[in-house]
Image (cartoon, rainbow, N blue to C red; front, side, top):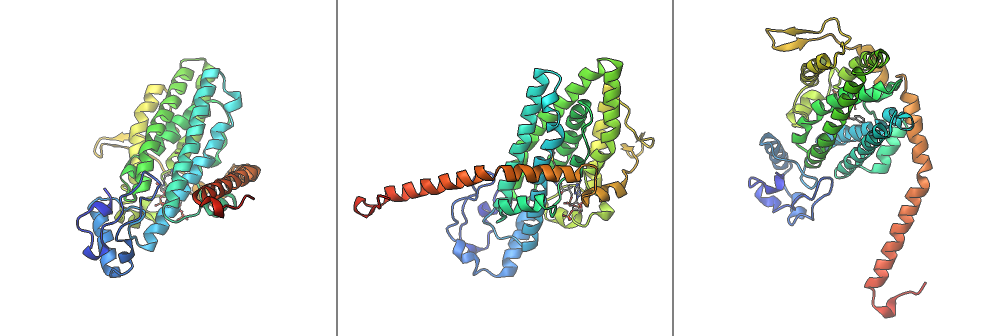
Length: 360
Ligand code: BYC
């Protein structure tokens, strides 16, 4: 529910507008001009209360600058991850082993583009400029998920990405459906539905390969060995080294800490690995009866730091590809802008009395 629908809104704020669909600001709030007149402490208190009551913050609601900045950072990095995340699997579209596998893979990669677009739209509701966000991505100023800086060496990687990477994404993103910022939370609901299909297609591919030849089973095991630790890194640094978690939890942007979600993922994935017949490459992995969770080893956090600073195996290639695609698409953006300007001219002319219309 929007803060706008909350009867505890400070009385001098007047009624606010209803939120629009995800990523779209709603119609102008009736009492919006009064907001500037409200006491800043009162606005802050109202914001805190809205979050504490598990209500949503909507684009036209007042929010602290730091909240806005954090939301733009997280949503932009998430959008970039979806867009860059098209590349590792996209690498196999032309070499898929059958028409069926190719159709599934194409649909999945297209879904990731769609996720990126919802998320850039959600960032725009916070006042971010999409062209600026793209510029930050292609100049290496803004991060995207570490996971997409590893190469996809065989077709088994496509299955393992679906199983582990989309599995980790689901674990991380389902709680984000209850994130305090409305447009982000609503975008997550649709994204999570699609991620579930992505995970299923990956697991189904791996089951098929595990029922195949020894060589296919070896490919699956090799891919799981390479992707296991990077998948654990997707949840971010350990809580003790996570500068943003505490505040983001307080603002209910994040609903669980990085370590909690990592544990959840391990607990969910170990039985799936057993069912597949794949060994996870962690000698410390074992069930802890007392904790009722799996114990597991730590990823190489030095490698994680290298990757998020731009020095992983594929960082340069991923960003260069994105930059080249952006530059190659300049004519499409120019054409769309020219078309929009022409349409605006036509509709302005249509709205003018005939005698005032220029025939040019
Ligand atoms: N990779 O204080 P922390 C997908 C950064 S795509 C890179 O814990 P926070 C898919 C972090 O940003 C789904 N950077 O941060 C697509 C922060 O940097 P700055 C991707 C990372 O935000 C295609 C710094 O490290 N999912 O599913 O509280 C095909 C300190 O970290 C990473 C999302 O984007 C990382 N792994 O928590 C297949 C989920 N981890 O800006 C699949 C949305 C941390 O302070 N994001 N950093 O310098 C989140 O849930 C949170 O932002 C994170 C990090 C859990 C990732």
